[in-house]
Length: 165
Image 1 (cartoon, rainbow, N blue to C red):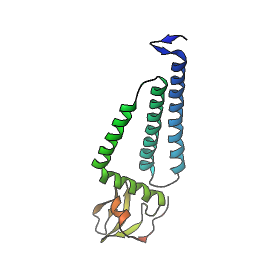
Image 2 (tube, rainbow, N blue to C red):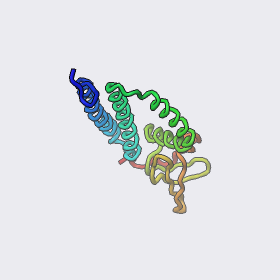
Image 3 (tube, helix red, strand yellow):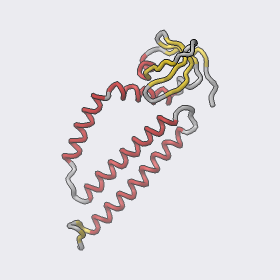
Image 4 (cartoon, helix red, strand yellow):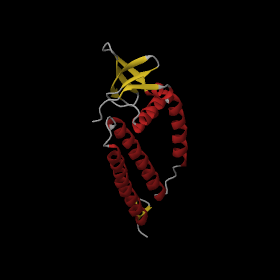
């Protein structure tokens, strides 16, 4: 077989096919995910971020597939990525806890913008739902940012349901 830069032509064709399939798959998965949650109020920011994470995971898998077809050893890279991900998860555990709690709060629609809630001695109207914290406006007009993990771990009393957009 013919070779180009030390790599067999069929391997290059296979690598190009994997790269193209990865690009299309990553785009399609992100698009389908965003479409599945587009009807829900207040989920745009979280949905975009989760969609990008899904897209990045597909791209990473595709890159590893291309390396495998081109006979590039990636075992040390994969082991290194595993070690780095463990270190990062420990370092960002509180942030990740709030992020996951925020996604779950948005997914089960237990709290939404416009609701008046009481949690742990705080009472206010939900002004904004973010990935890390929920913003409440108290009766005296002050803004309070409640970490989403706190909302997920404590009883939330919904005093008034806001209008669904």
